[in-house]
Each structure stands twice: as structure tokens, then as C-alpha cells.
Image (cartoon, rainbow, N blue to C red; front, side, top):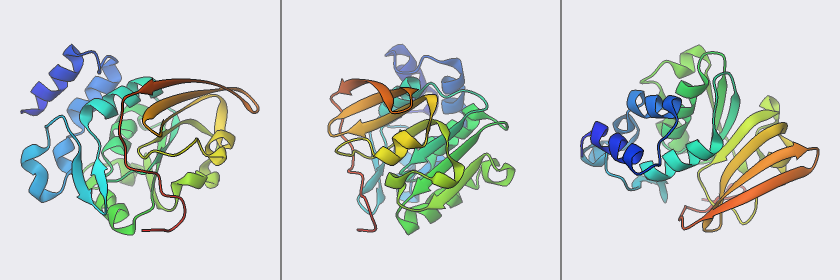
Length: 210
């Protein structure tokens, strides 16, 4: 499937709606974030393995979660479990030069892979993306608070560190078990949430297990 056909199908099916997110999908090529042997499948609407039991998420799922997140120009966003770096690059394109994406990846080899992939764009040089090799379940206190937090791996519940590091008025979009949870911070310790069921994700690993 050609890239534009994939994007058009996501628009037609109602998964891509926001002009800034649609533009990011057009400018940030998924083929630049998949392993060499997967290039022919880069525009398939399904997840692809990137090694170490991890995947680059299905385009439909990424579109759905970004639309829920509602990223905006100038925001600071934490991207937990950045994997190949594709979602971080999409976010960086949306937040622009005035914004910042902190991309956290626990697996050293994937951290290197993401860095290499992101090097195909100018986000790292400009400082729009900062990529960290760490356990993202604890967030990233150095750059907190965040306007938005998004995760690519499923936890049993939203880590308390993410809630603490989110600005009031901010939003978390993250997989919890077999659903996607949207959590809005209304005040100190005050959250409002909603769930979307029917998704499958790799688990969020806490600590340094492999």
C-alpha cells in the first residue's frame, strides 16, 4: 500500500481528523522508522516487529491515540517507550520549534535505533526532541511538568509519577491493560478519565528487566 493510500484510508475511516496530525503523517515517513527488512511493509496498517519483543505500533492506533492526545504547537510532551522513534517524530513535527518532546526508551539497542532514525530529520539538532535511555515508568522529573504524556506500552495502571509530572490542564493518553485511558488533570490530585476498549499493546516493563 502506498503511503498516501494508508493516510487517506485513516482519514476516510475517521481515525485521522486534525489537520496538524494529518500533515505530520505526511511529512514523517513511517518507512524511516522500520527495520531494513520491513521497508516493504512500512505502509501496512498493522504493527511491525522492531526487535527485543517490541513493535512499531499500527498506524491506526497511533492516529487514534494522537487524536485523543490533541498535541499542539509549543507544548512539551513526554513520549514513554519511544521504540523506533516514529511517534516522537510525529509529535515533534506537531509541537514545532517552540515545543519539545522528551522521548524515553528503556532498551539500549532501541534507544540507539530511535536516535539513528530521528537523525534523518533535524529534530535532535534543533533540540525539539531529547531522547533518553531510561525506565519511563518514573516519567522524567528533570523536564517536568509536561503538557501531555503518551505511552506506547500497557501498564496495569497509570504510574503516579506521570500524574505528578503532568501540568494542571494536561492530559495523559496511555494503554492500561486492553484499553486506552485518557486522563485529564483538573487540579492537584484531581483527575477525570475515560476509556476506549479493544486494543492490544506490549507490556510496560518497570525497572531494568529485559
